[in-house]
Length: 417
Image (cartoon, rainbow, N blue to C red; front, side, top):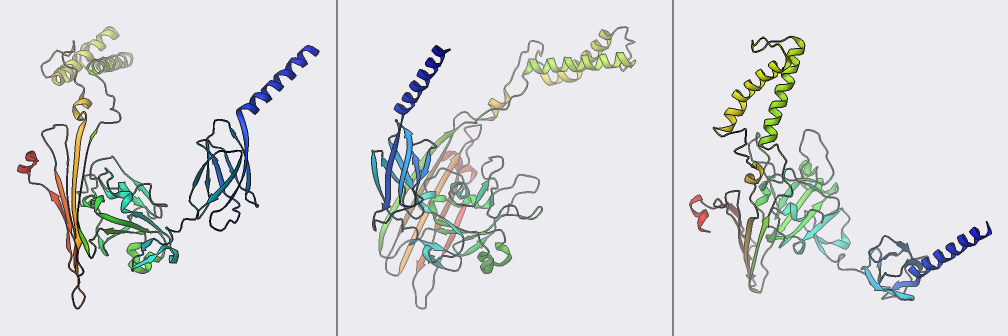
């Protein structure tokens, strides 16, 4: 018994020493880089692990981490995240982030800086949505605006996308927000037939032409746009030229290939024939047990009823469906899902823009062409869109705007692009 206790004690001691070798305790202090003040409540994360800790009221911390951890990440409200290499006694200085407070935000009735904003507004800038290979701007801002839920249906190109700012507010009425492009409210409801899947009129907006997207989420939007803003407002500001700016050209091009994530699994030819024979067996057995004589063959055994049903199914189902081929082999076994989807289906998009201006006139001209193919690679669907806003300063002040145009290339031009 004493020997067993000694062995257990040795094992416990060995495990304790091994654990001590695999972990270490890090201590330190976090302060403001400009004022030197201590920062209590700073969140500390160890590398890519889930180990978290916080600084105490005097700005100090103590965290036990694995020996393999190379860095700690410090985050605090109003300060930029700091990733610092691990040392024995750490001194971390964090800097404030004031650029968000000085950011200009469109609020529906003008512009203001974020530090003077009292409402709830989520903003997505052009840097976050341009050069993103997505079919519409809603897909580009998905996951980038806090409190905004974007849902897609079947994934069909150009389909209607649901944006929920305040959740689903009605069972029968629409929960879509109001869209305002350059101070002009637009129609976002589907223009397709009610018997078909809803389309998305906003798909013609090129994400590369967007300067910023502001989402008004609070009740103040109703004071500006009335009852139409009951589900929130999405303000879209397109790019404009700048005064006293040299003409700048920008060309963006991207190409991609796509494949279905997975194919649906259906019965092949042999499995379908086996299913028909199983159905004949079940029908024949049921009729024989209940004394039914559907075909007038006066069956003596259950096999007679089964053979009658098999003959009927083969003559009325298998023979017509096989179109003259031998379904017993089977001679034809077509995988329809492989024929439906194009393997490595290509798609491409080209965007060209020019912007500039002098002390009185500023302009921004852009055009894009996108092309994707269906199963038959010879059939393409090129779409083009363009926008040319021109602002001229006159006396009295006036502004001329050439609206956005978009559409589909003529059918005879498709194969020449």
